Length: 506
Image 1: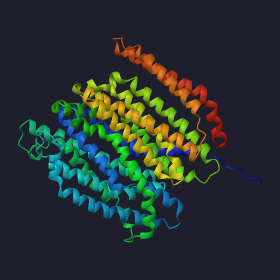
Image 2: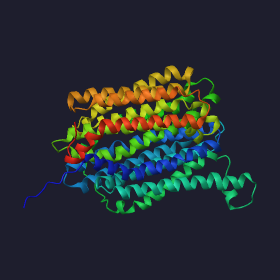
Image 3: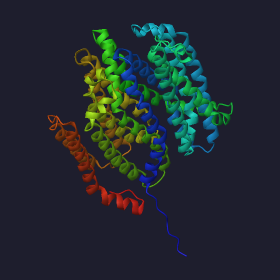
Image 4: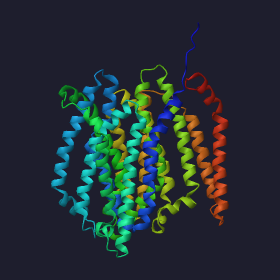
């Protein structure tokens, strides 16, 4: 009997994994996304600016606390037979360092609060303490979550992430709607007594901290698998691999969060600066759909790319994944920008003056996503130092543009700095990759699709004078349908071949 070889479409496998991880990344962040209109309608931009600033610091410190151990864990797990030793060593290293870093920060919480120079924030030192504990709980959960991903337990990973954000969402609504509502109504009950108006938006930090603690409890099965042992020789190898990723991560956070932090430092009018900080932070959330997809893709693609590395057609697979990734991101760009006439209402009226940053940030995130795809070359080849060089280049662009232009152009300079940094990193990563780990990407197709997207976007701009919003939205969405038709006509045969033989199409 002749046995037929079963072929599988690698794109389908990655799309499936991305969809499942989307349950744990896209859906939770969409739920969290719903908090944005609630917070922007509840608090003035100046107070929301505190939220944006502290969460930017949390994102920044998450990189310091994790010091590249997540990617390092994937790399060593894919190469070593003794995966338990990799798990134990990476987890114990993070546990010890988290304890040390957390105690140091907690000892100086008051001084950190004073350094932020935030007016009318009596409870800021308490916010700092909660933020440090959030960072610590995030760090401790990194390796257990990474293990779930490495074992392809995407559903379990996603459910845990979903529980985390649902609890955060529920508690935030409880504190800032139920309790605040009772307090504002001068009711004398349990809910009103729980609310302190001086904490205000700080309840969003408390809600996340409680949720993170619950996540650690739910990860107890993963913690039970840890053995209190640490292979010093292995740890040394892991740290050598990881240190450039730390620089890369810090530089990436400079690109992603520095603008939300320094805008208050660089603008002359501090009161206006805090309002601008809140407006930019609120409008930045609208562009989150692109970054949500990129995060879901990254969770799925990192183990997928490492797993594909030993196959003969791996480079062809990376190229085809890149093309369809770009196509989907371009569709998200059009879907968001051509529907801004109604999407803008997810933020309060005070915030809508900053809506012009959204298209710029969406295109910036697209460049970031492409850069994530390109980054596979230095991760697979072990040349992570190039990742650090690329990220530092982006950080230099971010700092330069922000420092020079924020005093005059406020948050618009922040948006353009983000785009310039990510596009610059993308280009540099591409050319270095072609030198050290050449992959034949379909640059022509991706360029054509990008030009079609921009053409449709500018055509939609000619509808700006139409006062009938329903008519304008209809015309805009017909342009999106036209884009989908273009993709169908140009890519149908390629997808058919890919599905038929399981090999990347050219």
